[in-house]
Image 1 (spheres, rainbow, N blue to C red):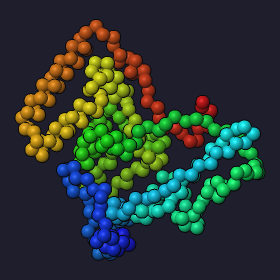
Image 2 (cartoon, one colour; image 1 turned 90 degrees about the vertical axis):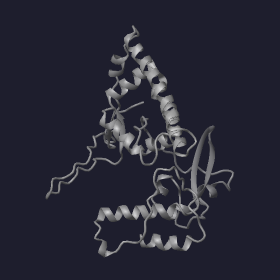
Image 3 (cartoon, helix red, strand yellow; image 1 turned 45 degrees about the vertical axis):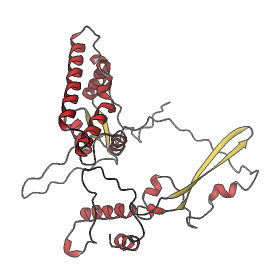
Image 4 (cartoon, rainbow, N blue to C red; image 1 turned 30 degrees about the vertical axis):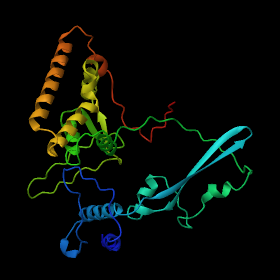
Length: 306
């Protein structure tokens, strides 16, 4: 934290956090000072505060600039493509260096401006094949949607704000539509408040990751609502309400107007859904309940999949 504040003070007069975006819910979390021994922070609290400081500094730094290189090799009529991504200017990665591995950015021991292996290879028209190795692998299905991916999708579709998105995600868990699981498929239980005078350690996830796995109830609900009124399970209607609420806050629309229009809209949808349930339309619930959400792939499972 101390190093982060020192770097920020040297940049504050010449830089601006151009990534900041005011959506009217609450100001961003802003660190105020480095910690010291008198604060008596535990190790977890100190790590959390350090992360807040690093993220704050990263928002003031410039973009990270990288270069994508590729080489196509013709070996006896078989085409092979090799790709490499080189980091030319670290930018905000100086404050959050662990993201470099996540972004698959290469940096060798000579520094950021190194040419890299593929740059050297591009200088030659031909190369000798020193060895050939055939790897046997199995295709794997994609992972379930993570919390971070869902937050990003909600933000891009205009659903919720920074203050309300976590509440929406918790609501679908409380109603039994999804379950929060770790990378091994084990259910992550919500933290429980310890009794007064006792400290009950929380069970840590078996494997890293936080994934939202739909339950049979959630699949059935979405499946049947999609048959009756597809707009109820798509983001457009909710995003429209969010936009109109924002316009009310900015004084562009009247609250009564928005309230009357949306109540009328959903009364009509409720009548439509109720009529569809009473009709002789085929019952899709059994088909949906036959679906079982796929669990996280177990790396130790060596059975073949194609």
